[in-house]
Image (tube, rainbow, N blue to C red; front, side, top):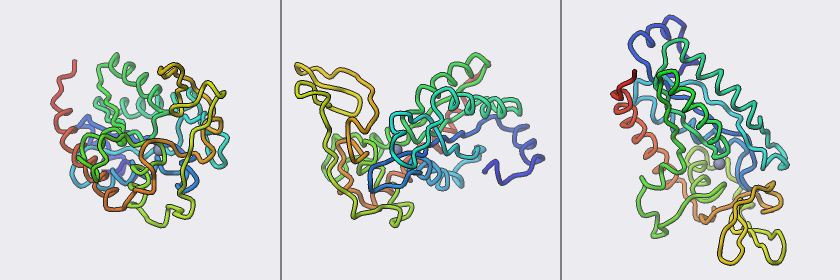
Length: 258
Ligand SMILES: [Zn+2]
């Protein structure tokens, strides 16, 4: 049940009997030269389309912007920054809480939102509520088994995992002519980047946060090259995430709250 599709009396009736809500957040940002800017919003929305008939939990509208400052120089990327993302999400969960929500599943499409979500989790706990984030792209690492023998793998940003999920939504959203390698740059000849937020020195990875243009020209990164993506695998990822969430919500409903 989608909040934007019901009336206020229906919402009132829902909160008389239920206290669980799904709050989705995505982002509008560069995902490599081949992927749409709305990737992190489109994928959670598709998971929710599949989940909706499997759960009675109320689904709030998906927030299409988030905190993505390190990608902000790529054309089309819009970051609300940490403070505004927090304020918006805080207002959304407080609004839902004022109507009776106490159990929040925060379906997240973008890692840059994690710090905001963690803050909300603790604030909601103080109010006698519970919030659990579900980062769909890490969830499916464990759910979808051996992916053509390429395990272990962890899907990156704009890599095969996200590309597959977007292909499952609409194959025409991917610009296949732009799929290419995305080599990492170096801070200096002695300090190569080992990921988008680490440099390597004496076999140790040191965390460092730089604008992504310093690290990659293309804008995708990760160990899962997008050339391996298939729509079939994307469908598997999306339905695995939806099934897991449906089961998880039933268990979350039974968590005792003060
Ligand atoms: Zn993404």
